[in-house]
Figure 1 (cartoon, rainbow, N blue to C red):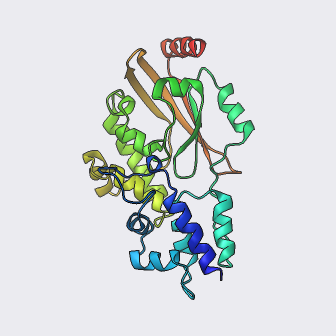
Figure 2: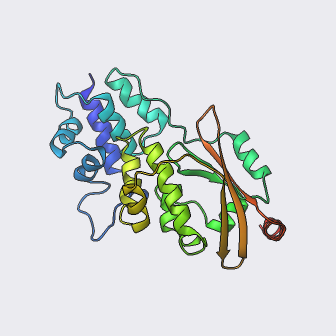
Figure 3: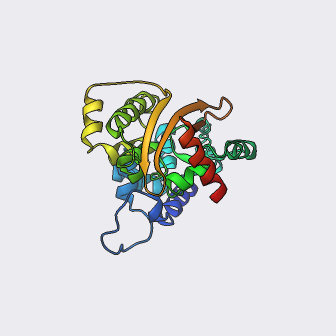
Amino acid sequence: MNEQVLGHFLRYKRTHAVLAHFPVTAKRKRRTPGLTRDEVAAWANVSVDWYSRIEQGRAGVTPSGAVLANLGQVLQFSQAEMDYVFNLIGLTSPLTHHTEVAATTLAFIDAQLPTPALIMDQQFTILAANASYQALFGPLTTALQNNWLWRTFHQAQFRTGLTEWAHYAAYATAVFRQYYSLAPESPFWYQVYTSIKADPIFNQTWAALTVTDFKTQPLLFNLPNYGELYLLETVLQLPATEQYVVFENAGDAATLAKLKSLATAT
């Protein structure tokens, strides 16, 4: 096995990580760039000592496929990078986590205008959104803050703008429980969980063991600059990539008129 090559690659990706893309708070200037070994190890659910041995490229130190997959997710590897590190240890990389959106899919959500529409990956992170969605709910930023669950619990447009926010947050929690069970060792799912676990609505629903799948949701928003918007949220999955297309269809004539006006302005 190429222990030293693997260790060098992991160390390079860790020390060159852009902190704004990770759930860390820079309270003081760091002595070294990027993430710390402690942070990577904690998010990947391995000991710091074991991760350090892997990164140092010690002979005979071979991470399991599960550990390497966790490290790759923590360090936000592309699919090509994930394939590369798995090749180094002589294993086949995990099933592709599709984070790239096909041009035809992008054209499809743009064709839905004035209806707000977006594309999410298998972990509910928004990969692309059309102009109507971004005008209403803000531009896309980092991976965690683009996540549907993070936005539901932290973004003002949902938290204060959605009339029945508590009901929607409970629904989102129940969906999360269902899909988290498919990959309970995922570091990114754990980051999402950590970012919302302190919320009382989340805790109440989580403790009740409520589970559901995506269902059409009637949503009444009251947003600055737009007033009341009645939207019907529908989620469909694309079989080829397992990505999700989310439509926020107008639920009444007044909302449709506002969306048309918004599309014209953007």
